Image 1 (tube, rainbow, N blue to C red):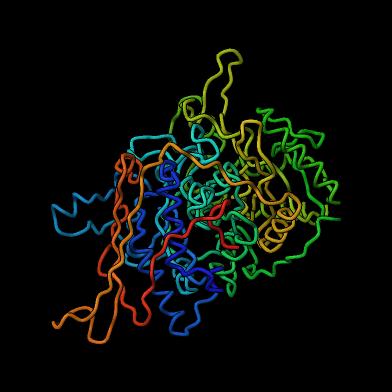
Image 2 (image 1 turned 180 degrees about the vertical axis):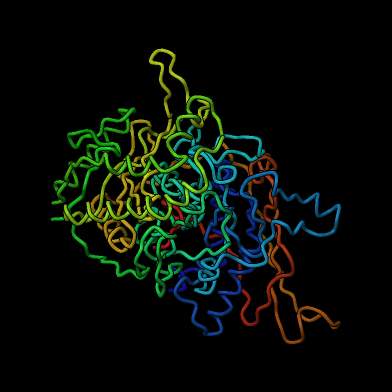
Length: 551
């Protein structure tokens, strides 16, 4: 669409913005810093390159949502915490932006995206400091990112805003971050595809706010598997090797050769007993609502020729949970909400040197012995919870004397092996909330996971778009374009150059409360970028019924 020039990059960004504002999706609060003015500037540069005959492939101006824990030059990195908060009043009082949270460089994979003629649309909302399976409001003062399929339910976390932006069709794809499921959980709750790559195969250097550095990685999410493969091809370190942050002893290549025609017939999928499956291969989770679409998906996979192999994976869990500090801290947190550290530094170093590689070796051995192509298991054992439940982590059941994790996930063990995981939507519960499964493999398994996601997409078909909300109707963006030429004095533009100056304002009763949580929304930072040649004209482009997409 964009590369064929059926629509310009400026028109596409405008269409996304109109869907976000006029379409009512601003109430879902996907953004912390939403800077459509800068996005329009950057889109106009791409359009000018195309008008001058320059190559704008492969992205041709496609915009990207970036989780606000990943550095992007020109944007603050807040991690959704007041400690890194920047407000417009700060600028008005001091005359300059607080620079502590304005990075001096972008994360390398963001630079790769921009170099491929992409643009950044904004910094996406998240759970404070990349924590939690839900993003209920906390002391950070940030408005909750709402699930567009049901705004009364959580959007999961912590990469909630990235998923909300893509699911709402106000961004084609997004960067997320995954330590223990923070990318896959929100993608699963909102009907998206996502990838947690082998650690080291997405280069974020020090451009990611750390959470648990032995497990942290940037991830990717998109509405379709094809879009996910495209995004992965842009930001992947194809020419490098990785040890998975020390998880594997022999370096692995990060290069992938995705099989776009993979058949599910004959594919062997292991069903680990500790990851949501009971001795039979039927799901028996807390929520019967989740079990129905998952069991239907198993039947569809069998009918497509996939071989489902239940196996006892108790050794996985023993090797994973018995690392120093893990088991004790889980038990302490469940009983006292304690944040005390357990285990010595020396023991943890020994785990990283010996225990973690042993866990990886056991995974690889299990794959080899059983000829598995991937493991298959659920993302979480409930549907997205109502926000009104007030439950973010755990609740005590007085009757049974046990703790209940209201949105417990099956995403905690696999990050320890630095492996690859990809989730795919399979259907919706009776309440309309999306449900997903995930393919999981050991380090270096990325190509297989991406190929399987493409095959799953063909089997399960396009996932339906969320309903159009009406609660935010009346908030409209007003985009103005003014040509600028040399005015006879020194400065910008220079003689012979033509610039376009973009302005953005919002009108409507809902705008003040729904467009901004804090930070900057719709405000350009610094001077407009310079370009010459044809000046793009902004026209209203109505999004398709399924929302703007990349295909």
